[in-house]
Image (tube, rainbow, N blue to C red; front, side, top):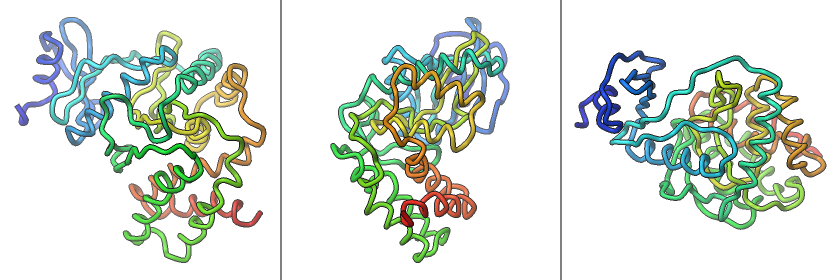
Length: 285
């Protein structure tokens, strides 16, 4: 069965007959079945498929933001529902902000908590991500979200040691910039615009999570980093439902260090330079 393609996996996990299929990306195929379409993703490994499936289930269990139904995973394949896409609209963005606040408020046991049934050694995109629990966000964020990718970037020559020292100094001072302590939030974890689908039903749907317990401002900072249609309305809806602590704008770069270093590891030097630019204000103040 390991050599079979997305058609056979979709048919077996849903019990339906395949009609047609079309490739959406290199790893994602939409398979039309006799009961409607599904999406089949080659997650790269069985562990990555399990992590994503558990993340979608955990996010969906909050009853807040919409996520595709998980039909199951088999080996490296993950089969989910298909989301008919529409156009970004301001009203949908405002609603999404409120729903994202409700998702975060559903909480997690600890910072770094994996979704129930999900592996501790998970992924963010194609990069390994370890879900190690912690009670103190500044220390946990430095140790388990920033430093692992910083060290890998140095080891691979993407960052020089002298440059890494700038980010290391920020890690030593995270508690000075973190703002008031907050309980662990239920994060999507990889919330860039490509994982935000504007559905034809007028709602926003989230896909491809790297779900874990974290600080809610990390999801928001990632939305801002990589751009999101109607971001002002998303933030307005969020603040209406769950006001953020004063000083959020000054903390955005701190929360962006994590995704920027992940991208430096995956995609190279330009993201390393962005990570350095995000870090420097916290060393000069």
